[in-house]
Length: 197
Image (tube, rainbow, N blue to C red; front, side, top):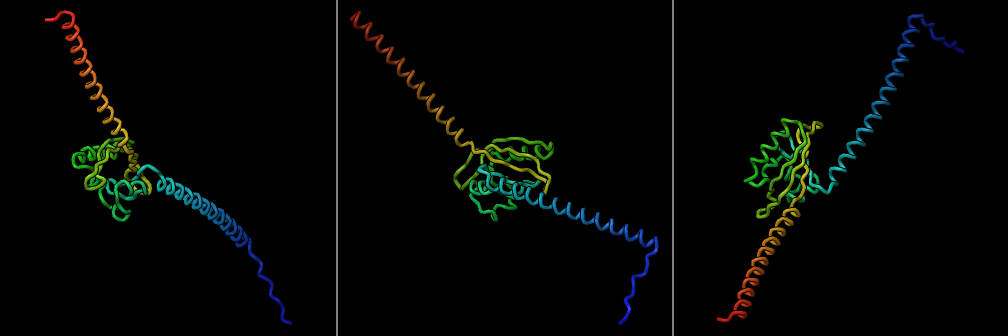
């Protein structure tokens, strides 16, 4: 039977080097586990953000520093009447009514320059003939892209209430004029009944 060879004895330097390598392998395994856990947390966070963004009832868009649409949720697509592919890359200012585009340009510049959240009211052209008053709420974003997150608040109900209030005020003023005319007529009639010509 052939004799098995035993492993050669390690020198003290080789033993230290082997221990150092084992410690390094253990450190790398621990670092790898930490990185995998960090990646899982990041993916969960990204998924949570995506769901909140996509499922938000408020129209929301991410625009770059030029105002180009990088992402839009379902509510924004419905408001602007576009499919996602037809909206991405277009400038948001194309959806702003021509008379309000300078207001939006100043607002965009201020938000990007000051790195601050802000609000602005303007009208959007939601179809060929329809305009919609909205309030923009924005905040600066830096990851994964620099730009703004725009959230649009529909102000049609507020505008509807304002128009109704104006109509009610006109009706009240008209009723007051009619009441004054009636009082004047009754006053004249009672005077004539007391003192006939």
